[in-house]
Image (cartoon, rainbow, N blue to C red; front, side, top):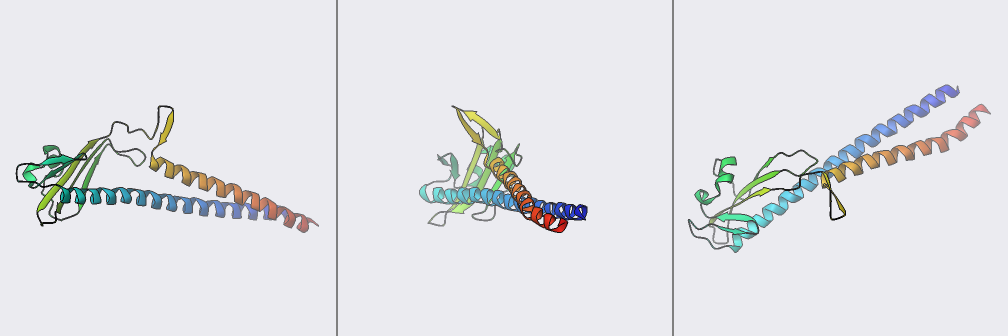
Length: 185
């Protein structure tokens, strides 16, 4: 009889652990997705604002805050045109390309371009080519530890799963032990 109860306890523990893993995985993936979307939103917003601030003439692109702003596609840097050979047709859509990127480290190179308009309905191409110097998931600089946000999200998911496992194990012991002793009695 006790074997059946221990087996039942094991089944309950397994069920709760599986639910915890699924829940932590789904929430971690959702957090990562929202994290990446917030960067995209911020980039689009910055690019639109820069297009509003700069006065340009054809053939005279400018740089501001690390972005290249041009009034014609032919004035966009060649490095961007190599990655995006076709002129963007949609307005306020951010086109991005990452090189050497896995989910847990920043991309080594980021290319992005967006076609937008200014207050006078003049077309602007805002682009950026950025090379990351530090692409490690975890690095120590000047005595401070920096953890890539995607790694941090994964660690929180693993930590949450472990915490739920421990809590369920403790709860099963607290509740199952009196029931087992009652059954033996």
